[in-house]
Image (cartoon, rainbow, N blue to C red; front, side, top):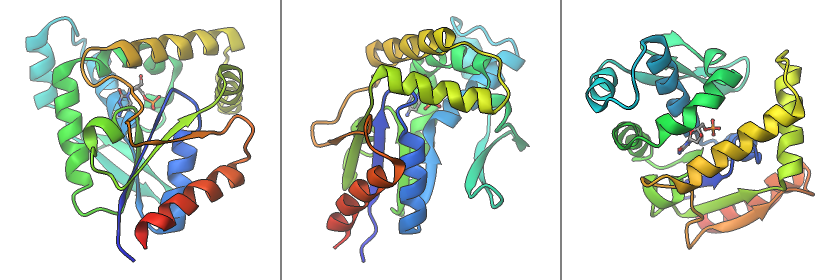
Length: 225
Ligand code: DC
């Protein structure tokens, strides 16, 4: 069977990474969470007091950042390493969620991340989730899925995920963060969140994870024949 690249895009917390992870596992592909890279860069900027309005500081900081994914066998996924340190927990906090979108909107940051993402997909066999994978990173991906779900459902899922991890947060805070990120991600000048014209929409508001996976697997199998 031929190997393909699969782009999974959509708004925040609509189940993109769950789907991408499951698809990669079923197909024996590599799963890449491109948002983790923007989160890792944001963490570095915060820890090193980089002023994101200052393009020289941003450019210098990017020269000092190395991002790598390392397979975490226990969890069946990959952890992000920032300059060799595992930052998987540190990049999932509300603080990073609140600060990542303006960082991801910086052109130099996107050039830096996209070049690495494209390199990872050169050999095919990659399922990458993000916002601009089908439009910018892999414009010729054989399968592009644009995932959507109602705002209410997305807030619920994200709230459950955060509280299960022990984060003290209200649903109102989660909703505010989600909507703010969606607005910044879809209105930024560089590579905004857009549905690629050849993407297939997968609305999972009323789908179980299993139903969502079965639908996407069918699409993938059609394209690998
Ligand atoms: O998927 P996520 O919530 O972890 O993404 C974090 C942020 O990075 C989010 O604000 C959108 C941005 N992002 C992006 O601009 N392009 C991508 N390919 C992936 C994420």
